[in-house]
Image (cartoon, rainbow, N blue to C red; front, side, top):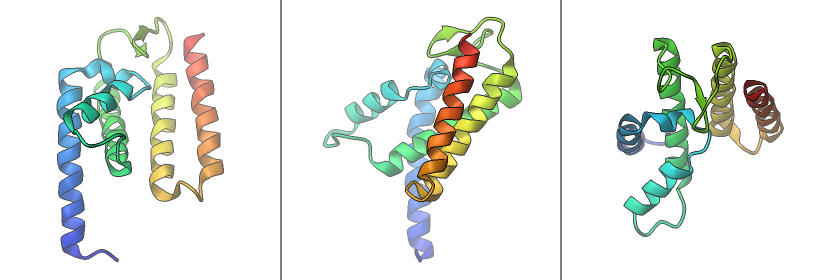
Length: 140
């Protein structure tokens, strides 16, 4: 069990990591609408020499923040522009409910990974499949 100081250090580290990503998403809100985090990850790697890949804790912080910010956008009815987008391409005329479903499945995926990536591997696989089907429906 982690001591209270260790927990405080973890929270502070996550907060500063989330703060880093929050600035990026504030400057480039369209990145929230994309499924891929590649651009954000490449920027983090460029800003943090000595890292060949994103540490797991940083990846989790990125996923959590993106999920939080997407939920906030949905609650406010504000979707990175007036037309919903997926991977930077407009999705004209598609119901917002499918986008909300995709975001919720994405949140469930993030939570499952955080709780027990190995123990919930079959659940994670099913959630991936569900999200992919929703994305396919959005693109029709």
